[in-house]
Length: 295
Length: 235
Image 1 (cartoon, one colour):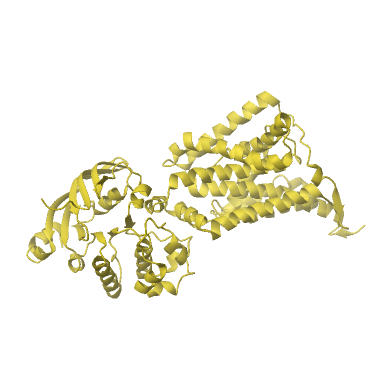
Image 2: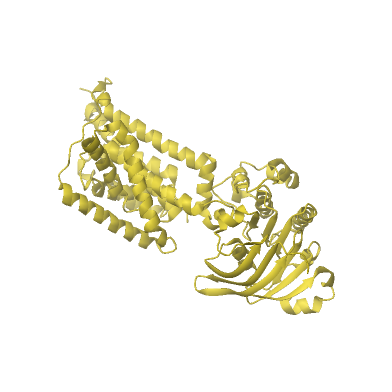
């Protein structure tokens, strides 16, 4: 059996794959947080709950109306995004002129309420969600076995992240978004409906969490606390990448997933803490994160 | 009675948060005029421009543009009526390159300058299209800030200290541009510290003190009013 640094290659690549999968979710979720923070100045603590809602939306669609995975991938983000839009219109928009702390508190409270309601209804144990038949099975790459669904998650997430990056950094719509992040009142005085843009941006960021939830449903179980567990790590990722940086959150998300996976191979004891250790070091060296700008 | 002014401001009050900045500002700008607001720092000149554009947190009174009341409209709707604002800090975005900054303000009506016409006025910009907006010199940033609102088709321009901190040769270029815009029929409301500069293009000057308009001086009377102006402006 071949080894690398004394570790069987099977185990190494297996953990790398798990790292990339986790990294896909870190990237999608921290991207949504970054987009929202950039324009709204809101630290969206409800992101984990919204991710969980995406997974549950997929579950309900299947249970109630028989709509399977592919429909869920389309419908669940829209439903969760609309939910976000209602939240923004009715509550968040009242907080923009206040300190970040208020938005954080409101969204944190919202997350607790939503998670509590789901737990009351469904308990803490997970509900199974079958992966789509088209993506069952896997292929042998010679050095490792690659399940098709996991490959799909990585490819889809990468595409979604890069697509979002492209829209924000390279299109006309994105230039409005970037300019409004810097100077919202001037962009509005040019004739752009900035409040509407803010609402739609929040809806989009929340929808990203919803997509991630659908993608996660067949891998992890659908459970009320699935987002609460993940969001803490995602916030560490966002801090490391730098609040508000689009490419920063994508690169950091994937990279930290891989680092976490490798730590499981070489020093398993640290695998749960490695991201937080990196966060502490990055904060000491560069308080705005690896890709962040002063704001 | 004289023809109705294009912009009529009556009893305009404005607030930033809790501070009451404007206390009943009144003035008119007629079609095709260049009108300046003069006054010391803190007199409320910038706030007046921002209040006309709807960019303050609270305002009261009346701002009529072309007969239409603006006081209840959000700034994006005001812009769509053909008013464009160029802020004192120029408002060039660091995360946009020069071309993106130039194309940022949406076209609100027909008749705006094409991009090539803007380059005709400010040839420097054409060579720096891919530079980060804030990497330009102060003068180039000012040209970019003026150039981009000329694209929008707005015919009423509010310019906040377009010459501040610029080299004399750039000031002359900006002055020539404003005179040319005036000749082309633009209406311009200008905040300016330098009344010698303002005198080369303005029709009338309003003097502001502590959130009010306290005097109006026609440009022909500027020389004769020099003593009075020195008192107002403390120069």
